[in-house]
Amino acid sequence: MLEIAPSFLLLAAAALVLFLPGKLRAAVCVAAPLLGLWSLWSMGIGSSGHASLAGFELTLYSITKVNFVFAIIFLLISSIAGVYAWHVDDRGQQVAATLYAAGALGVTLAGDFLTLLLYWELMAVASAWLVFARREAASIRAGVRYLLVHVAGGSLLFGGIILLYGQTGTLTLQALTPDMGLAAWLVLAGVALNVALPPLHPWLPDAYPKATVTGAIFMSALTTKSAVYVLLVLFAGWDLLIYMGLFMALYGVVYAVLANDIRQILAYHIISQVGYMVTGVGIGTELSMNGTAAHAFSHILYKALLFMGAGAVIQATGVSRLSDLGGLAPKMRAVVWLFMIGAFSISGFPLFNGFISKSMIVSSAGEAHHYVIMLGLLLASVGTFLHTGLKIPVFTFWGKDQKLEVKPIPGNMYIAMGLVAFGCTFFGVYPHALYVLLPFDAEYHPYTAYHLVEATQILTFTFIGFWVLRAKLAGEPYIALDTDWFYRRGAPVAQAVLVKPVNAFFAAGAKTRDGIASILARNFGNPRAWFGVNKGPRDRFNPDLERASLSTGLTFILLVFVALFASIAIFS
Image 1 (cartoon, one colour):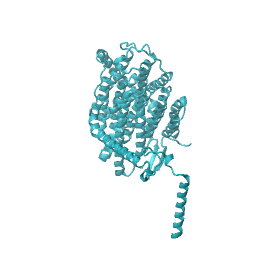
Image 2 (cartoon, helix red, strand yellow):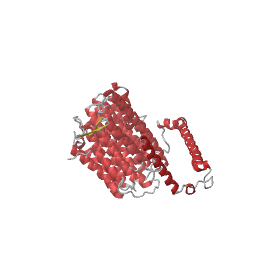
Image 3 (cartoon, one colour):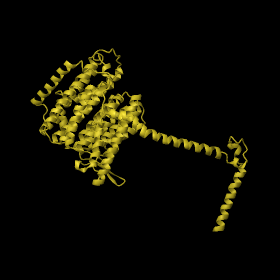
Image 4 (cartoon, helix red, strand yellow):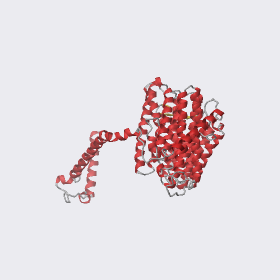
């Protein structure tokens, strides 16, 4: 069988979508990831593809036990997101989404740093388009900030790769250690930006709420989780990541509680949930790394479902701020039930997929004797249920009725939400279906009496606390300041120092160019006037009047040939 990597199939699909009409584009967006999934499964673990470029030996794809599980979920969610976006007739969004998925697959399957970098940059550009595509002033500004930040992150990654190549003489992906110096730390900084590690995270809650309704589904699934995979491959066992991951988990929870926009709440909670995965990478045991892969898989499903539910609310009402929502439950019953499956999953309810993956990382922290880390992650779980399991649904669907007009949403959105909700439930009820895909042989049983009692206690007391304090937890019409304040406040200074002088320099150059062009046009537009033989007005050049007669031109050409042949005869 001809082996074609899933990333190549998606690149070809993006080229096809560029030219196809109407619903054929939507069909390709759904079918191409499924074809990629079939290709991935057919090729199997151990398959690889190689090429040479400018003297460098590249591994364009290499399927391993670690990236296999990430590739599966990226392809599944890309296809389901295509179903969710079936009604969208926007060629630009469809091409960008397909390229974005191709970039995530390319990063995940890459076997060398150069291939990884190229797909990394493709992801940045394609995902930025999903923010621009909303075509609102705020979205365009957010898209510019998003793109600039990711270009900076890519530059850090590129710098690290150059230094690594100088040290090792190879581009092959390999585990990095702190003693590799600046090269390893630059790569870590570039990857940490895509992971949304504070304080490098503001691009995420800034851009995701301003993306298109359907584009946000792809964004919630691909960028941070592909970066988690790279962390897992390159930086497993780095102790620093244990503490940074815990900080992420708690930081994201706090800001999710403070946020007012429903998609911004979910965006901040991506930071929190990715924090669990980063902690798992830092612990570096087989159980923790299995937990990282499993939680990435689960997170993509339930976070996509939550973004789909939030998108359905925005599609139906045009409103995204929690303080302006309320009373929607009787009008959007199916969305409520589907959203609550995502809320139960992310909160770690038994029989849902968050329960069988998050606890694996928490347990690995305990096994590695990181008891403070374990308690911190349990505390973050309280915040998760507080804002995503309770705050969003209560104040969106059962809060004060704002008398909003609710428009019908397309049926394909319900189908996509139903598919993801099934996945959240299926893997929660039958965790072996996920565990069998995990890369390491570390046995784990989620449904123990201790774990069930622990989860029940956390959920029960969190609910009681929420109910007592619910009036203080309602959405407030303000914006919580985050670390993006520094570059927003610094923007005028940077513009005055870096942008305005450059613009002035080029403006002066353009003025000089135009002046020279004017002088040349004025003095060389009618060369016959130099000899006083112009036939028309001096201030207006008419080529028909000034053109020499045909006989004059032929005579001149004949004289040139005569002179040429005479010269040849003389000098030969």
